Image (cartoon, rainbow, N blue to C red; front, side, top):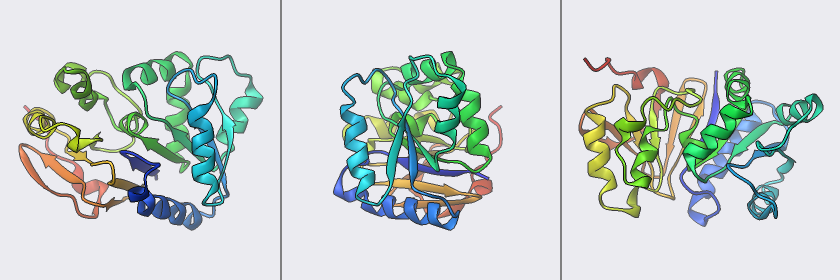
Length: 233
């Protein structure tokens, strides 16, 4: 069972409904208010950390643990992180974030924690990392997704994710083209959209779209099982 929140963007008024559904999911699981924070890169002044503290604090949540992947941490610090009720994965450079998670040994630890029901919250890059691969991130660097399919990530859901859909008109046709090459459906979001996954249920907030085998349609609330597609030959 997984409990995940996918944001394209978070600290905007349009994302409030995603916040509320995240809160409802945490309450339904009987969880507390502590959130751990894993930055995608160096954050010496902790500007984004403090921004998230204020954002979550407005909902009565406490971002209490800052876990820098570039620092050496003892067992007590890791225990404090995984004792949190949720862990926030930030936006940033997705490839660099994945490298830091691998190098620090945190990738399998996060995956196991999430598979045991821990709540992961991903914004942009952090959301992409919760899927099987960071392939879709290639579009942000002018490359093609099929060049990154081997860059495997946390693999917690059977779909791929793409944020910031409306930032460029080229993103949708490129995703449609890529969808004909991958056996996984793609859920794509504008900044006001989001996805909550709790157990087998996938709740689509706003107007995410589902792209599979060249077909684009509005993403309705669905189950994880219904997102499994036949392997491409």
